[in-house]
Image (cartoon, rainbow, N blue to C red; front, side):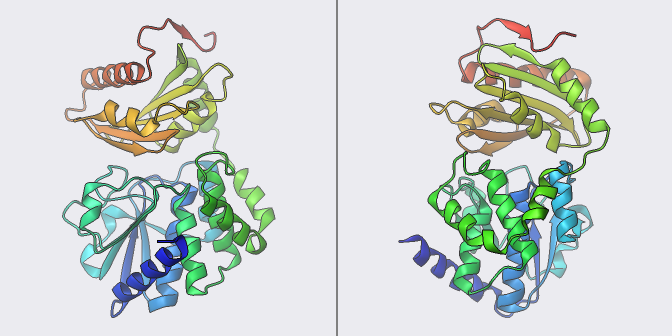
Length: 344
């Protein structure tokens, strides 16, 4: 089935599911990135336009990265905390840019998810949802929603177009990371409607002073082992920093793998990045968290989380050693020499 035909069929099924409903809850990642935020706002637009549904968008964590906070502010978005939601008040629950059981969202296990739209590989629990649209070949979830908007004949307002454009550019690193033809076509469609000045403002989102302390700690803790750089942020209140540090370290000219960890809400969070094309970051992550937590991702980047059962320092140290050993073994660097990235 061609992409346009698939989108048309999916949109019709989604419209049928919306029929007769009044309230939709959209659940996103605990620490949402621009693609996730934009996709949620696009689904809200579709639900409003197709069925006059009233929508709430909910996440279980924080928006920490400067760019992400700037995007939320620009959209005037009121994100509701998952632990404050009365799920019984909603006719439908949707998950976008995430899926049930991934561990990166706070959708309770006993709450059924009716709609799942994502660009990550499909998970077992997702298959039970009445409506799914999983396109793992796409570089962003926002691209799926651009196709829906086009199919529905909806011209996105400037803020939504700007958010979707930034979401696609961010997740694909300006089309340089795992972008598909569909992502390129979506950007071409969005560009005339987007606020270019606002895109620049969002990309230069302000950060608090503590950001630089966390960055300094990350560099001070960073170790080089073969083709990899590994670091730990310790206990943090901004989980977005983990992925941001992993991205930054991959810019070192002799490095092809990076891993950054941190402790947040009694969970060890993990981000890995790679410039290699012969290994899949998602596969490496799944080996690292096997039987201990959850994780997923794509060819060149992945994330995971392992909950602490006891919450003790010893347990955490053992888990960190386990994570590091699994990572280094998976990328073939477990026997390489170890050295500091920067002088103390």
